[in-house]
Amino acid sequence: MSGPEDAELAAQVAQGNEKAFLAIYDRYASRVHALTLRILSDPMLAEEATQDTFLKLWNRAHLFSAERGSLLLWLLTIARRVALDRLRLEGRRPLLSDSNDIEDVWDQLPDGNSLSEEHRWRSLYFAVQSLSLEHRQVIELAYYQGLSQSEIAETLGWPLGTVKTRLRAALEKLRREWNR
Amino acid sequence: MALKKHSSFIENIPAYALGALDAQDASALEAHLQTCASCRDELASYRLLSDGLLAAMPPTNPPPSLRRQLQSNLPATRRTSSPRARIVSSWGQFAVGLALVALLVLNAFSFLQMRSVQQQQAQLSRQLQSEQTAMALLSYPGVKTISFNTNGIEGSLLLDRDRNALALFVWNLPQLGQDKTYQAWLIDSKEERTSLGIFRSDSSLPFTTFSVISPNDFEKFVGLGVTVEPSGGSDHPTGPRIFRVDF
Image (cartoon, rainbow over all chains, first blue to last red; front, top):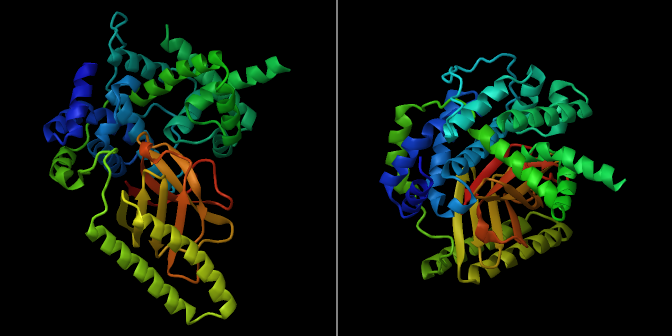
């Protein structure tokens, strides 16, 4: 998806253009929904959070600035916050998975010659999946459940120092793997 | 010693990029980032990673009904004002505002009849301060009045973006225990929160008021939320959200 086209669509949405809004929806709803479902693990709550995210796009498209990043990342940043708010509002305890139980539609290795964003995200996805269970758990709780390091320590029953060490190691490893 | 301290900042950067750093460490790192270019570069690198984690999962289509629902709801949710447009007080708005103040005054007098003179004076003093703020806001051009009703908690928000001032009037706000407080947060377009302050509901009144003139520039904020927090407040929202008002 071309950057300038997204910015143009956002500008049109800011003017009240429903067609432009639906074009953005058709383009990115599956990504937004994947994130809200990942955080909330409940299809109904994820659907509501996805709806809230796109309603915020409708009402705040005038606040999007292409200079500060892509439209997709702007939407996903909003979606993450909306979903984490919902998680807190529901008073739900963090969920932990001890297996790769997500239905995997990315079952192919990324093409090493592809430079697309899609390739980059897929390679990061596989890099996350290749982490140890402890490393994946701290990233899951920190980023997809919105917990602080102290809260993670309490949830997992680990010393705070262990959480800090493992989170840092996990992210350093991911950064190294992803930038190869 | 300085080297050890700097290395501890570097070690905290990955967690900070994920928003997982505890509040005290985050504040210290933010102060350090003001003066350390290498740490800012390191943070930028980890932010690319955290951005990638937002998208690093297989896409999942939402139900087709969601698209239809959004399409049919869009015109009803469109905000008509741009962030920089002044909302000029019309006589209609002024009349509504006067009615609101009159309602506040009437309710104050009805409670004065039931309390001792000493308690009445204390309550009146607090209420007068809020009402003075509210009355001041009502008389300013550019003040916006937003009504809300969330799960039976209803009220009005008076907002003056030019003067970074707001007054909140809330009805049916539940009483909290002594170990809890309500905390108001400004919300920006990326859903980040900035604390506006804490307040408690008054058991002697059926409504709660909270007014503030903030050092923050209201232009960059798109809403206000209220959560329940431990007594004394929190650095970031930790408790359930009670209601939210979009500007």
